[in-house]
Image: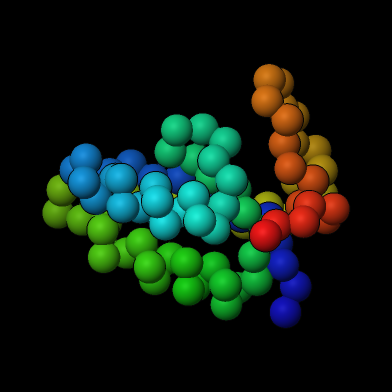
Length: 94
């Protein structure tokens, strides 16, 4: 199953739940903004990651978790200013 670049963004109202989601994502993705992460995962890996975060997302409180799949062409055309961006094809993640 091919890996694809994923962009994950959350908006969580509760500070404790927000911290839990951030910790889960920080262990599996690179933070690019305060509540925005990017990672290079297969569908199965993404599903497992999202499953870990869902207990901390409360629709009743107006929380949200958004996941975008970026095709290789779209990812290659991404423009960044400021901090460098990981080259997921060449990166070695330990």
